[in-house]
Length: 591
Image (cartoon, rainbow, N blue to C red; front, side, top):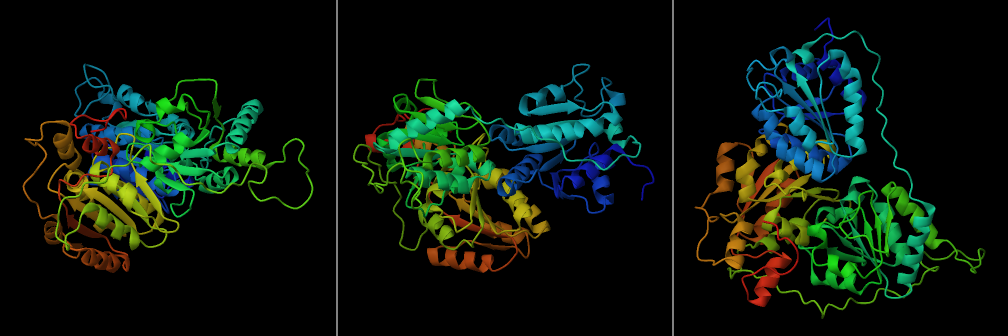
């Protein structure tokens, strides 16, 4: 037991007072004092050691997305700090708050060639400059006493933007002794002002007019999940009698069993979503800026349609007369807008019997969407035996047996496109996918973070390419006996890259097909006690999932699939339908 309190002890005490329960990271000489303070703390956060700093950042990502709790990351200097870059970039791009505590060589050695120096002196890399570009807030702490102000400031900055905030902590600063401190209070979070009444009145008028004609289409994005505003979205959609499409990174913000649910918007979406939006008399964007992945194919159409955008960030649309922005707190804006839409209009009686939600607008019922103008090409699936599993069949089985309130974490690529469209969520379920940077292997750490945050069964859906990048985080799940099911679609390839070679190029070569790897057998041999299997049929997959879900232990299920299976990705489908080897005009096609 130490008799003196250090800067790192203050940091851990502050985190404990903010009810931070976990710190995700990888140890090293220039961050080991923080781990020492975590060990000595009474009721302090648990230090979780990842296999790679990128995965520590993705653990923080999944932790927040699953629970809205503030995550904390710890990393040493040098390569450890550099390994955080893609993970922090995803947090920044997806507006996920996190606090990153990054160790540095001692301040006394700045400019003297210390190991892993990043002071910016004597020709070294400037870590402060690097992380200032990636983070919403970055400070290099050079005075021990400054930690009592800089730490709360960084914590508040991460929540306010939101995004990752970075504190660079030289080792001698971490070890410095502090005078006794008062119990750290909660940092203040900047309040977002409400939108002007005139803007809201204009939005109400546009939406009322649209409801009286061909209705309103809603596109909901990740901001709804970030604000935990799903009930407010459901109430607003009911008030408008509106159909709701969701952005790819917002699959769970609207119940897919609701008859108003349209499906996924954008390049991973369907013709039905596109047609519904094009037929609507107005479009309501909620918690999305309509980036390329969510809005491909829609941006030109929306230039001639009234659009109301509920998001503090400007949408990716050119300003025009019928674009109205409401930029206040998302949940509050939706609640206020719903109330004003349902309020009696001029000339209506204020008394009498209570009205049904849309009586002040209209209640024509949900007319069928005309999709004849935008036919959806059928997904091309290779011929297989009746006992074999393809990605779509496997995804449907996964969704059928998920326990209530479980969490699905999907990687990017072909696997992600299939999971988004074909893995159904159970009541209270959540779906997490990273569309900011879209880094392969994100799902492994994110699922571990989600399981730490909630204790619920969490299911990874990832390809073998993602597994080979960051799949060894299975070890972290085993160490902590987390209820994570790792489902690997093994097509012995980088599937999306191979599909692009076939469709957009000559198709007579591939850099992205690999020799067979028996992932399920290999993981079973590597980790005795891990339930690792390779089912060959839907029945075997269902049995394996049900067996795993009856436990609290981690498991791995490897499903062998064909690399030629084309996912529900609209640029691919349009090329197939057109019989050409050029991408459709749906904007930038991600690689």
